[in-house]
Image (cartoon, rainbow, N blue to C red; front, side, top):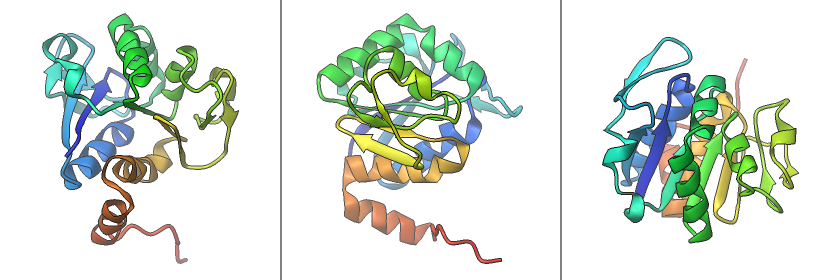
Amino acid sequence: MAKVYSFWADGLEEIEALTPVDVLRRAGNDVTTVSIMGRKTIHGSHGIDVVADCLFKEADFRDGSLFILPGGGQGTQYLAGCAPLRELLKESCAAGKHVAAICAAPSVLGSLGLVKGRKAVVYPGMESTLTGAEVLDVPTVTDGPVTTGHGPGASMDFALELVRVLNGEAAAKKLKEQMVFQHETVV
């Protein structure tokens, strides 16, 4: 069981915040949601309020194996503006811990130099924010200690990739089967 922290801010994409938490917990991981807003209630980009487990200042992140940034335009701006979070991400990645971001949030990793020389994805139109990365057009990609996801529609792929990274291929495959996850659409 891995210790995971997901960082939340007003304007987050609700599906990108909640899907990884749900899926990682199903795989047996200990996931803590962390507000960087100074209050636990977070106002999502689509009018859904979510409540974080704790505030940033209350947490001790030394036990973390994975640190997640959900996207959303405004939420990403708040994440990028949080100096203690930026420092935590840099230190964690340097220590070989895993960092992950989806949608607009990979731009935060790009601004920190964490995707330089790596394969990465970001929300369409934001490719220039991934400084030094080989930008791909796939739902999600892991390169070294960094996983990035494309956008809201890739939330399940992103979450299952994080399970694969932390818990192995067999655990991800088992969850796909249990959740009846399929890519094919029948019309």
